[in-house]
Image (cartoon, rainbow over all chains, first blue to last red; front, side):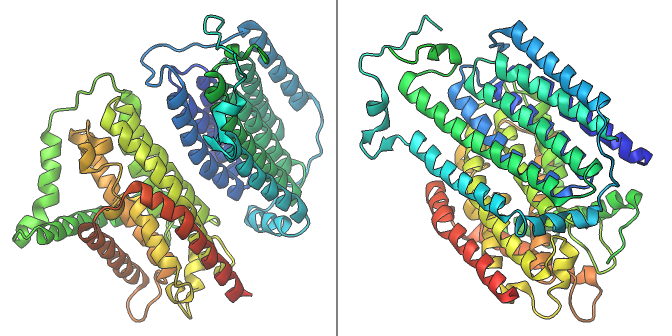
Length: 186
Length: 101
Length: 310
C-alpha cells in the first residue's frame, strides 16, 4: 500500500474510533447521534479505501437519514434535548466498561495473533458490478429475503407505533388495568 | 493498511459498542451501542472481503446483510420505544423493571 | 474513458466553475424577484445586488443567540457549502474533462444530498432557538419525502448506461437524451431539486413565516456563507440534472463545457422562475403527495426504463 492511502486509512480509523467514543460522552442526544454518524462516515471511508466504494457510499447515504431520525427521536424523548447540562445516564458502569475492554482485547488479540488466509486485493473497478451480479444472481434469495424482512419490519413497526389501532386506541388495549407508573422507582 | 490493523479498529468499535449497549439507561442510547457493534462487524466483513477473499462478491453481500440488520434494528427499536413510552411513560430501562404489575 | 485532472488542480477548477455560477444565479434570483415585484432596477443595480448584500452581511456584527452550540453552528454553513462543492465535483464537464468522476458517481451525489439534511437540521438545532429548530424539523419532513423520488429517478437514468458513473450516463445519451427517453425523470428530478435546495414552492426550512427559519438567529459572515451555499447547492443540483437528463456536454458545434453551462443555466433559470411565480404549498400536502404520487411515479419511471433497456 502506498503512503497517502495509509495516511487516509489512519485518519478514517481515528475519526471512526474517536467519534464512537464521543457518542457516549456527549452532553446532548443530538450530538451523540451525529457523533455516531461520524463513526459511520469513518468506517465508510475505510470501505472506500479498501475498494468497496459502493458499500461505503451507501453506508453514508443510509446513516445520514437514520441518524437524523434518531436525533428527532432523542429530542422527543429526552429530558435534556438541547444539551445545556451535562448528561450522564449510565448504570452498571464498571461492569460494562470491563465488558467493553474485554471484548476489545479479545477481538484485538484474535486480529493480531490468528493467521488469516491472504489473497490478492480485489479489483476496485469490478467490485460494484460484481456486487450487482451477486445480488441478482447467486445471492438473489438472500437479497430478496432481506427485502421481505424490511417490508415486514415496516408493517410491524407501523403496527407497533400507530396511535390508533384496529381495535381502538393503542394505549387503551395495551396498558394493564391498574398498573401505576412507578416514578420514584427510577 | 493491513488486515490486522483493520480488525483492531473494528474490535475497538465493537468494544465501545458493547460498553454503550450495557451501560446506557436510555433506550435510544442502547440502540446506538448496538449500531456501533454492527458498525464494527461491517468493517470486519469489509476487511476480510478485501484482504482474505480476493474479491469474492459474497463478502460484499455480507455487508449488505449487515446494513439490512441495522435498518431492521433501528425501525423496530424506534417503534418499540414509542410503544413503551405510550404505555408506560418509560424512556429509560429502570422504568421497565416490572414486566408485570 | 476520460482522464482525471491532476489532484492539485481540482479545487481551482471547482472554484472557478462554481464562483461565477453562484454569482450569476444570485443576480438572476434578484432580477426575477424585482421583476415579479414590479420594481424597475437598472442593469448595474442588479449586477451589484449580490455584492451589496455580501458587503452588508460582512459588516454586520456577529450573532448573539443564547447559548448556541457554537461549533456546530459554524460548521453547518461550512458543511453545506462543502456538500455543494462535492456535488458539483461529480459532474463531468466535458468528454475529456472531469473533476471527480467516481465509478459510483450517482451514489456519491446521493450521499452528498442526504448529508444536506444533516447540515440543515444541525443549522436549525444548534442555534438553540425556537424558529430555527422548527425550520430544521420541517426540512427533515421535506427531505425524507423528496429523497426517495430523487434516488429512484437517478437509478432509472443509470439503467440505460449500465453504469453509476456520470460520464457513462452522459455517453449513453448520444442518440437520445434521457429527458425524451424517460419523460417522467426530469419533472420528478426538478421537484426534488426544489426540495433539496428548499426553493420556491418547497421553501419550508428558511421560510419568512418562521422569521427566516434556520437562519433566524444567523447574521454576518455565517449567514453569507449559508446563502452562497444555497445558491451553490442549486447550481450543483441543476448541473447534475443537465448531465443526467439533458445530455450533459453533448451538443453540436460548441465545446462540451459550454453546452453543459447552457443546459445548467436553463435549469437554474427554470427553478428560479418557478421559485418566484409558484406559491408555497403546504408541507403536509407535499408529504402526502410525495409518498402517494411521486414515489409510485418514480417507480413507474424505473420499470419503464428497465423495460426499454431490455
